[in-house]
Length: 262
Length: 271
Image (cartoon, rainbow over all chains, first blue to last red):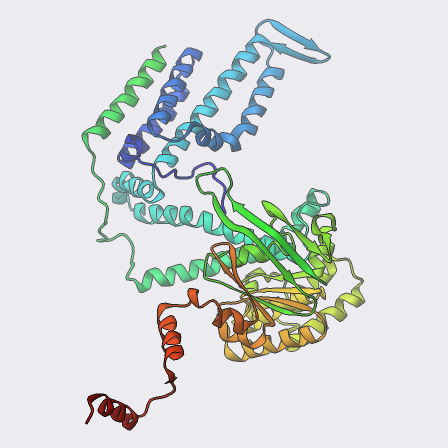
C-alpha cells in the first residue's frame, strides 16, 4: 500500500475540486509569482490565512493536508537555521560561543519559511484537488498556443499523465522487489551509507528493467488501440470555463493585490 | 521445522481513509515435512498471509512461532534462511548479470564461504533443472526459465520451509510439471512446502492439507477431499441440488442412456 505524499490527488467533491483545471493552474501560477512580489510579513500572513480558508473550502482534512507538507519540512528547517545563525542584521538576541542570533535573522528566517511553505501548499492544493488526468488536460490546453511554433503540447501532456499514472505502480513494484530481495537475505538498513546504497542495487536494477519492459508494453497497447498522437484526437471530457472559474481567478488576483499592498 | 501462525491480523494503511483489514485473525500450522496448500479467491489475503511467515510483514496483532519460539526473537537473517519465501512472479526480482550470480546472491548474503556458495548454487540450479542456464543472463531467458532461476535463488538458502506464492501462474505445462515434482521431492527430503495456488487440480495432486481463506479468515482446513467436498452449505447451489438429488434418489447420478430415459417416461405415463 502506498502512503500519501506530496502531489497526490485527494478525491472528495468540493467547489475547489469542481473548478476548471486551467483556472486552478493559472491561479496557482499567479499565486506563486505573487508570493515573490510580496515583501511584508503582514502580506504573507494574509495570504496564508486566505490559503487556509481555501483548504477548508476544498474539504481536505487539515491533518491530511499538513501531511502533504512533511517532505519539505527539512528544507524549511534548514533555511530557518541558516538565516537565524548567519544573518547579522538587527539587534543581538542571543550569544553562545561563536553563534549569534540577531532579530533580523530571526525575522528573515521566519519570512522565508512562510514563503516556502505557502509555495508548496499552493502547489499541493492544486494537485490534491485536481485529478492527474484533468491536470494534464489543463496543461495541454494552456500550452496549445505554442503548437504554432511546433511545441509538442499534446505529447508533453501525455508524458506527464503517464508519468503520474505510473508513480504508484512503480512504488508497488519497488516494494515487491524489496520484499523478494529481503527474503533472499538482503539487508537495507545495515552498514555505512555506501554499503546501504550498494544494497539497493538488487532493487534498482530489476525495477529499471521492469520500467522499460512496461514502457514497451504500454506503447504497444496504445498503438494497438489506434493511438497516433494528438492530431485530430477528441476528448471524452471537454474543458469548459464557467463563471465560477472566472470568479475564482479574479478572486486570486484580488487577494494577491491586497497582499502586495499590505 | 514446525511453523505456527496464531491469530494473525493485518491492517494496511492504518489510520488513513485507505485502511484495509487484509487478515482478520488467521491461525494455522505448517507441520514438518508436509505440503500445505493455501487457496482462496483474489483479495482473500493469501499473499499477505505468506509474507508473515518470514516476518517480511509484521502482524498488526498475533504471533508467528518457529518450533514454538516467538519468531520476532530470532535473528532476521536466520528466520529468512529457514523460511524461504518465493514471491508471486519471482522473476521480476532477478537482477545479476548471470543466473549463477543471481542464485549465489542469497547464500553470499548469509555469509557462506565461496566454495559453499558455489556448491549451493549448482545444487539448487540442478534441483530446478536449470544447470544449463548458469552462465546466461537472466534477462535473456524465457518466462519458464526465468521462473526456474528465481526459485533456485531461494532454494540456495536450503530453507526448512519453502513458501511458494502462486509458483505455477502463467507457466508452460512442462515447467509446471517439473515444479510439482520438485515440491514432492522437497517433501521427501523433509522440507515443508507452503503452496499458494488458484489451481485446485494441482493442489489436489500435491497437497497433504489444504487451508482455504475467505475475506481474511480461514474458512476450511483439512485434506483436499475434505475441503473441496466438505461443508456442502458453502458449495454452489447447483452442486447442492445435485447432491441432494443423489441422496434422495439412489440410482441417480450415473450416466443416463436414451432407452433408459424412454422406459422411465413410459412407465410414468403407464403405457
